[in-house]
Length: 174
Image (cartoon, rainbow, N blue to C red; front, side, top):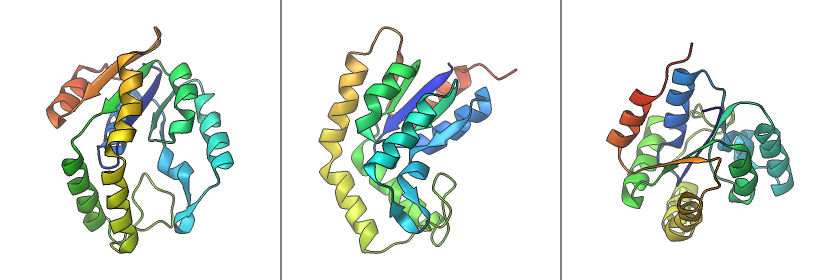
């Protein structure tokens, strides 16, 4: 593993897995949410997100977690490992609510500084987004998983136990 693409819906555990895998392998970790947002929850333009994502893809080694599906094809082309966290939607919603409480008033480590977690109408809108896109977002990832290019090793995890087994089997860094 040299370039790892970790994807899944919001609340699936992408950031947590990326950090754990980064510690275990020594690979640098990149979070899409740090590209997606600037301080103050200001969303970057699509062009800027594309450019910043492309810069990560060009690096020699990475663990890159997160969405921005318009760049999936490029990421798949550069990645050697694809990890899909296919966690049930109600479990993901619970995790999003849990992290909103845990980090309330603070920026999560996988977000840009100045993006404190809140519980407000935006949170409710985000939960609605998760529910609304649960099938369409999953279908995009399923296509990659079911028909990967030859160079790509693919994994699909649905439970914490599967993720922990994978991490336990990963080679420690030198």
